[in-house]
Length: 308
Image 1: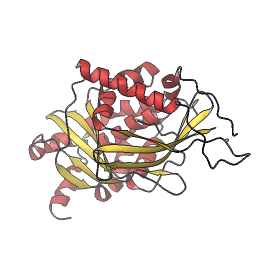
Image 2 (image 1 turned 90 degrees about the vertical axis):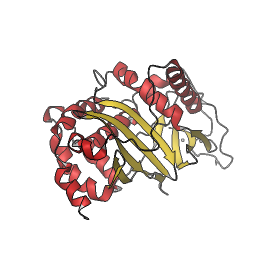
Image 3 (image 1 turned 180 degrees about the vertical axis):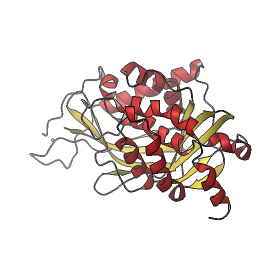
Image 4 (image 1 turned 120 degrees about the vertical axis):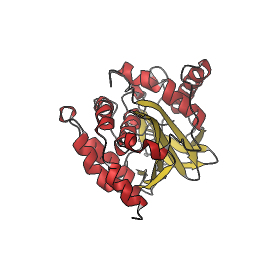
C-alpha cells in the first residue's frame, strides 16, 4: 500500500494524535442524524539514477502523511456516524456483505501484516530501469511500474500493525477503544473504507465508498459516492455538506488543526484533491502515483520512481 503525501518527510507528525483523540468525544456526542435520517426515509530530476538505500525506509516513511490520513479519514467517517446508538434497533447490527472480520491476535494475521509491510518497502526502494524516453538534461525517472494489492493483506496490516506503528512514532498515546477494526475492499472502481465502531448499544460498521482517480495534472481525487451505516445506504451528497459544519464544531479546541477536517471533507465531497501523490525515499528519490484502479477484488497502482 502506497502512502500519499504532499509534504516533505520532515513535516511534524502531530495530526494523527489530534484526529484520533477527537474520536471518543465525537462518538459520544450523538444526535446529528436523528432528524436527517427521518427526512431521508420520508423521501427526501539528472539522468543518473541515485543509488537506493533500503535501510530505515519505513522509519523515514513514517514521516509521510499517508498513514496519518488513513486515521484522519477514518475519524471523519466516525464523526459522520456519531448517532449510531440511536439507530441500533433500525440497523440491527448488520454488517455489509463485503466485511470480513480480522483476528488481529492470530499469528497468521501478524505474519501477513509483516510480510505486506516488507513487500511494500521492497517495491518502493527497488532499482528501476530508466525511462527510455528520458532526454539529456531531464530529471532522472524510471519506466512506469505497477503493483496490485489485495484487501486481505492490507487489512492484516491496518489492524495488526498500524496501531502499534503509529503509537511507536508518538502520533498517539493509545489507539481509541471505540475504533475496533478498520477494513478496505476494492471492486468495480470503488475503494470501500469501513470502520467497526463501538457504541453504547453495540458495534456498528460505517463504510465510505470512494471512487479514486488521477487526473491529467497528476492530482488524486477521492470523492465519496455513498456512506453506509451497517447495510443502510446514505447518499454522500445528502450527508456531507451538513455534516462538515457539525463535525468541525465537535472537534475539541485544545487539539486545534481543524483544517484537517475541512481538507478531508473536501476530498470526500470531490471538491479538493491531493496535488502531489508522492512518497519521498531516504536516498534522494521519490515514488509518484500515476494511476489507481480498483477492480477484480484488487487495487492496481501504477507508479514511477524519480529523482527529487
